[in-house]
Image (tube, rainbow, N blue to C red; front, side, top):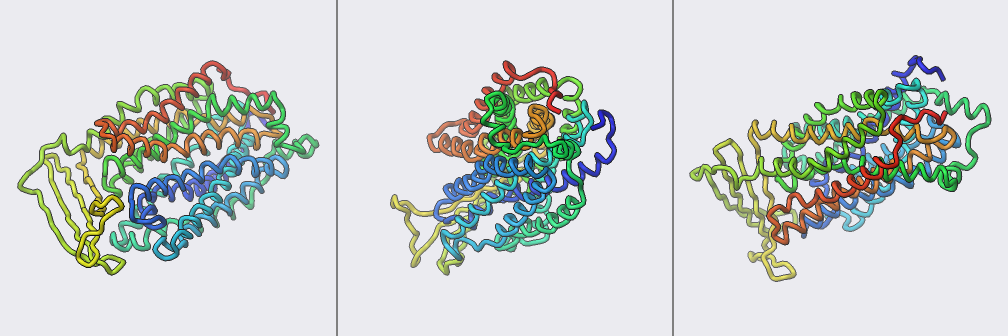
Length: 512
């Protein structure tokens, strides 16, 4: 491979990035619609339990990713990078489309969450094979000394995938009424993905195999047992574990805190209107995405370690102050209410079970332009309130805060700072992982630590952190909203310590 030529590199990046972007889009649609999905595929009796169950199902797709990394990584090292990640693309697209077709819990009962779980597992398996293939494919087309920059284009696809998923959701919401979106419109983003998958498949089909892998295969230097050579060899296993605990684990929790937890926090803890929250996150991601390229390029100059470790340290020290400022920005108890604009409207309405509900809608307005709405629904049976297992009146309460323009930009800035931390740890990591392992077992060896770090440590973050917040709130902790941050802070701190002690300061370009 030439050490300077970039001929054809943009074609490689376009094919790899487009497919990877679509797979991330598919994966994130589920997370972006978690609040809506919790009402469709799980029992409506306990909204908090339904939301936590949705996050757990979302996390299941992450947990299974290491198995996809092993299965598809082995195929990639045996038969080639190109054909393996074409299979993962089709598997991901098919599973996503079918999630949009699964009937609701009201229609088929517990088969609904079961089918969704199976499809989420297929998504996770596919993504487990996709990322390692795309990153390896681009890296092996890149000139030595420039891998950080060229592979950072792959890193942008995860954020662009989330950004596009948010934009598709916002567009769908804008052309449908709230009732239409709630009834069937939330399925549209799942269905749309099949068209993008088809386009990406056509593009990838025309690509050639990685020149580095093709050369190794022609010379008979490919592995006959990638799994054994990757994890049965003590010397290589040491690097797998170092990649996991010294980099990928910390990168995973910083990545998911700055994007998914921020989104969940806005919607379920701060009660920001869902469309507003998606818009805030979308803008912060758009402003932050170029920094993936910047830090990827910079890692070629100053080394991967320094940038990734600094990103983790910033996250460890600043998460709690940032989230405290986010919460206080929309905390209506700190705002001045316009008392004469407070309203309470009560109506009785028939629900989908042909029973009556008493619906109480309270609205408040504040001097800075913030609007607060709380809808409390009390279910009736034969004219009497339905009681829960403890004898209390069963009710559902939904709070929504519509924020003013000043608060919008404050929140965009605070999320943008978190996205910068993400770009610091995530921008250089593809090149870092590729360079840790030799060509013949690279796909397998790099995929496993990446997907354990992101899939398990990162993927479990929304469910674990939401549980910590919910538990602290029930116990009356006045700063309950900060408790979910202990998980990413502790995991990132462990990874930071290991990485600082054991990772090389200079980039490793010996494994060619």
